[in-house]
Every structure is written in structure tokens, then in C-alpha cells.
Image (cartoon, rainbow, N blue to C red; front, side, top):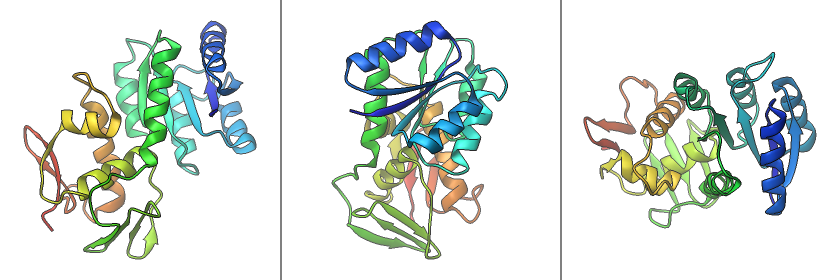
Length: 226
């Protein structure tokens, strides 16, 4: 059973999602505003957040930013089809994935499970390795820069673990979607690009001239060479 915080102002969506996930054995905490969502997050410590972008008062984007200011809890955005720009901004604000509404409970649960699995390290690579001023500990699932631990949400952590397990090997965006996000269809590369941008901001001294997560133009990304 997973404790899920659903922040959604539409009563019909709130009822449908909660009924479907409860039927699958999950505990659902329901709130209708970002302000209440932040309070419930502190009070109840959910394992994952489902966050609507179109909220009254504090927007879903601002709620996402405020959550990321103090918590690395996984966040899955719920978005309407015409919220293209908001989805991108939401991913850049720290969300791990998104689901287009309306969506079945099966789809939502599958995305939840994929996000929650991202704290499991890849099998390949050394258990503990140092790259420049970056230390990656695959057993403790910790990343340190200049001996200070970095706060990485599950998706950023798994992306770094995956890329660093094969230094200098280039992976396409589609390969990363399949391996990190578990999207087996031809997916949305914005997920990858937004996550790389967030990760670079934390691990790179100069994110615009990255040392660790390097772009292979027209194809994808690689770790190093260092």
C-alpha cells in the first residue's frame, strides 16, 4: 500500500482517481488547494504526490516549487491536454513525471509505481565511485559534492546513477525514457531534457558548460569524459 497525496480541486476527478487507487489498495489523502496540500504533506508524510496544475489560489506550479524547497517526495503532475507550457514548467520546477487527464487509474498507478522504483540503483557500476568533486554511493543512494550531500528527487538520482554506471557511453533520449522513466512507447523527450537541466544545476559548477552530464547534439546524453 502506498500513501498518496492527491491535490486536485475538481471534485469529479478527485473522486474518480481516489476510488480507483483505493480499489487497488492505496491510501489516499485528498485536498483541493495547494495550501492544504503543503500542510498535509508535512502532517502525513505521503510517499508520492499527484498534483493538478490548475488549482485555485496557489497554482500547481507554485505548489510544486514550494514542495521541492523542503522535500524530495516524488511528484506526478496531472495535466489537461492544452497545458503544454505548464507541463514543461512543472517538470522544470521539479516534478518527476506527468499524466494527461483524463487518465485511467491503471495508467496513474503505473506512473506512480515507475516513479517509486527509481530509488533502486542500476545493477551496473561500482558501488561507490568518485568523479572529480562528485561522490556517488550506489548502496546508500547518496550523492555528495565537495563532501556535502545533494538533495536529489528519485528521477534525478536514477538518471545520474544510470548515466554514471557507463561513463562516456552515449544514450539517446528514447533509451533514457525507457530505462529511467520506464516509458516503453515513443515518449516525450521533455521529461529527459527538464530532468537533465535540474540535475546539472545541482552537480555542475557551470551548468551551461557541463562537465558531468554532457549533451551529444541531435542524439542524447553521456556521463563524462572527465
